[in-house]
Image 1 (tube, rainbow, N blue to C red):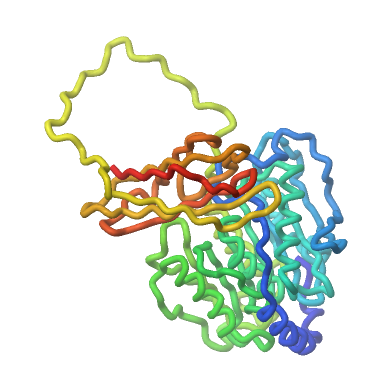
Image 2 (cartoon, rainbow, N blue to C red):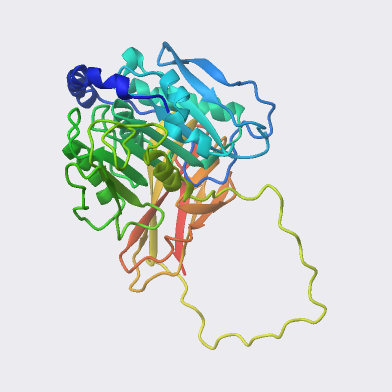
Length: 434
């Protein structure tokens, strides 16, 4: 990482500038923007299989009518048929994309073993005011450009940043919960807005107990948003005492499967590079990089293998048959299940929808199945919280492994993105439980 000790004389000025940006970011509405793709999709990005045209270094892009830039780092020995993890690192106030790149993307690059594509966007005025959602749109546009040219595992997108970069990472988590798999926020606060902020996202917050720029209470507030969203058991994690020069990492209990929350408080000031046993930040000795990488690495890809599994010859002796059960399993009947469609977003050439599946029977379901009909020119491109059969015409979506059991009067949702016009909406919606 780049050394941050030279930034300490500017901390007071940074605090003033950060405070000045809060009102603009929080009061300005964020426009509806097309999400690049979704967490959990089984579809490869358009760049898979292509000979890439993007190369390492500074790339330019037009976003919201402005010329913007980012630094791209492609793994050594890039394989166009391999789906890579994508990590986006946002810089701090008065920092730069070059600082993030030079620092090894918060120390994750040397840990990645060429498994990850890294991106460091450049903020306007070296910050992330996110005025009218412009920086969120930049995130969408960069992600789209990278994924149209390179092969990315769309269930393995991660975002992180320190200070103002942490604030922007939080804004992405709020607004793009189905795009990013997890976020890490170092010494952050709500400075870049939070459009949405009601859906679960795996979250790792890191903050100094005596942060003189962004008080730790601000970091706790961000954390608690996702403690609630992720269904975790509320608690007050232990935090180290003054002059102990240590950190305490807490993993919350009770969180929804696949949506953990971690909180690491350290005895220190406003820095991304705290060191246990020392009051002096040090990029090469900090524990933050390793803990963030472990947090991100726990999430496994949901993409199918590129090579089919080996086939096994049928047995020469047929297996013994089993008599059918005397009592048939319960089947769904009229009134046992309802499925309600809601349009979430529309953009030129695509739309996003959400379906709420409700168990209206008096028993707990073992699974559910929803059928729907897409109109001419409409095709599903990605699905989350469900598994689809078919992408055009009559499509069937079944429960994922973790949301098939619905208690009586219980419900769940699944979402999808599709190409084509969102009008007319999907029709002939049916629902059944088993």
